[in-house]
Length: 191
Image 1 (cartoon, rainbow, N blue to C red):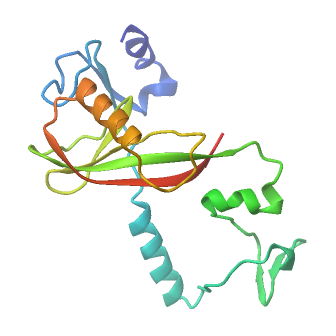
Image 2 (image 1 turned 30 degrees about the vertical axis):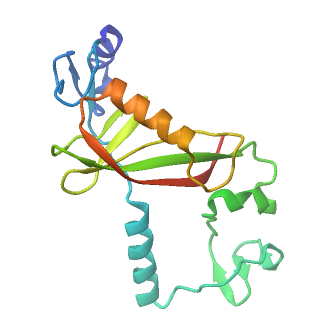
Image 3 (image 1 turned 60 degrees about the vertical axis):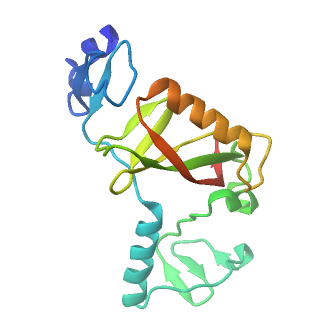
């Protein structure tokens, strides 16, 4: 807490640290005996909504093609060329499939499994919390809780082990009454 109080007065941090709070702040939701920090300029991206809106926008611009990408057909030079498309640049958004991309084969990333819980809360929640895990409010009295990191199991099946880890951390760090509604697993590239 002392370290963050000091940083909160430094110019490099003033745009990001809204307030350093005591242990009693938000105690109805979170257990934080040393306090914490509230941040400016932070949040999350609802990836599903973003991808849907992006696709709708690109389709309206007649700039959307759905097809398998064949790396060998990409030509790099002053302009990027791929089949009948010319562009200034190409952006790969492949998630775990990036492991198969020859342009990134030398990057030191690995695939890691992550699991989330969707929970129904007995009280409304308006703040995104991050303490060993995150708790992200989603609609009225609902939240996403996550995430785990499993470097060995890269299946997309949810596990009881991950559920127990998330629930243990939720119970030890938060004062939230909840019911687990769903559990999801996915794979992400990480370093």
